[in-house]
Length: 75
Image 1 (cartoon, one colour):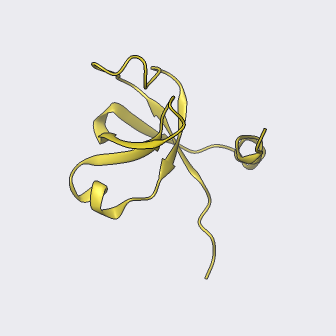
Image 2 (spheres, rainbow, N blue to C red):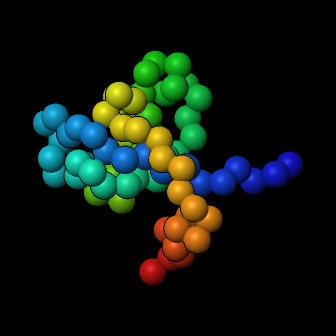
């Protein structure tokens, strides 16, 4: 079974969550089919934990492999 490449989204809105989300920032998407069915996405926010947010607050982005690799490095 192949491991899925990490996916990223860019934040478009943060209504009421200015501390947790930064507009125009990239966030790691955590696969969650149940959240998808409810119009939500699970992302790792500024707290470092994953939470659910409205899907329409984010847009998927296709990143080049070197950028994905750079985001995947633990610092």
